Length: 490
Image (cartoon, rainbow, N blue to C red; front, side, top):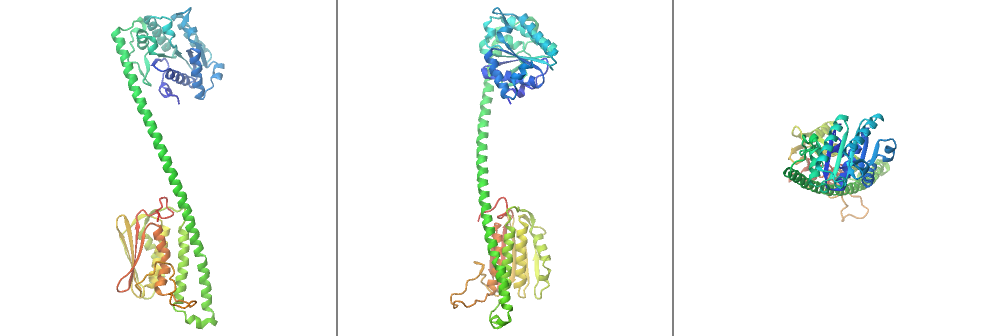
């Protein structure tokens, strides 16, 4: 869009305006925007100017997307030399110039155009022709009346420094509209009686008009400088935003690579464990190995823990979905639904599972991960309750949510530092080491512990003096984990 295109697009038929601009580029841009608006409306647009100005304005029009060559061929764009229009034998001939304007308007209507508009870039010609202020005032007043009568539009762009005070006052007094400070407005200097009288104001009034123009130019210059500073600041902000976006993209790619690696490792760990479980189960069921089977203590518990660990790894792999997103999740509902989906646990002999929770405990979590964690905790509670009730309690701590599980276990050592306990160094090499209940719990709780840590929470296992085991989980209310858009790094 050209600089003055928006302002000049509001011109109505019958308008006569002027622009007392200082710079040549501003005058050319204003004239080009004026002509472009007329061409888009289907009007015949004429430019009265020197060859230099004509070429410069045509370049601006071509840059705006119109073909000046084709427009000139069909008469939509007319270029006239300023001296040819304004002077006869070196003198300004007002009647001849008015007649040229009338004939151009008649030709326009005859050719079927929607209207006529003309722009004048006279340069220093008016001053060179030695025209008097009164003569110029009468001529411009006649042009104003001609435009109103024919519903045409005329635009006079000039350099106020080249005209002198008298001609400048005549121009300002006879144009109802003016382009001042880049804004189209009703001309505050226009003096309606001078339309027909050709009267120019006294020196005091002329000086006042010039001072007003100078003040307007200073204000406009300050606004332009402020606007340029804002544009520079916006460009700097845009650059910083682009840099932040690039860093965010780099981080997202790094997290995707990390998630892919963790998923691959989880799948690799999960595959051999079911195969190992099947082999051990077949081995223990072989009648020929009855004596060896009887010497393996806790073999059933070990196989059960091994199977749970394999299933837990599969669960971890399932929730490592890079497309998953956290959503508003009620932790109370997750625990209740998971307990209801495993009714067999509550029916077991000597096992009672109880839940104490507020009405709702909502946070932004991945519900799939929470279900996997709660399911394993309920299974572990039912498996290792050993006659005592298993208590689940939920607490709202503001920024975090706490899930506490209490059940009885015969040991004070949780052995959670590794998913599988290493053989004691005192045993002979090759001797089978039975898995203790501590190791079984460690195997069972390793997948939910890792999942909670991936979600940005904490997983704590403690044993009281009376051998009662307590699991405490705390999750931030906005935990997103590996799959979320704002992944927490650990």
